[in-house]
Length: 116
Image (cartoon, rainbow, N blue to C red; front, side, top):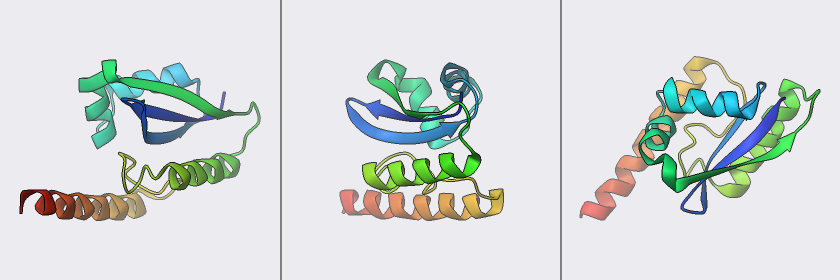
């Protein structure tokens, strides 16, 4: 069933996602086939994660899911302060790649501030 879900790391919201399949099937894909920063972190720290489906509708359109995902990412700040690689919603791969590059620059700035 189409849904929006949130992963919490040590009780703090860290990732928001959407799926048109059953949540448990999507969860398995995060653990086995994903290549994003979130997927790698989740695989190595699964015991510290909890998850919650926050929106679920049998006949949700892609547009409804995109709107809910973008809103939830913005509200929980999981793009800037979490592991979402984009601000959410369905987008072409080229556009998503641009957001991932921006996210990498953001993390490099944070890292350099911590080191100096």
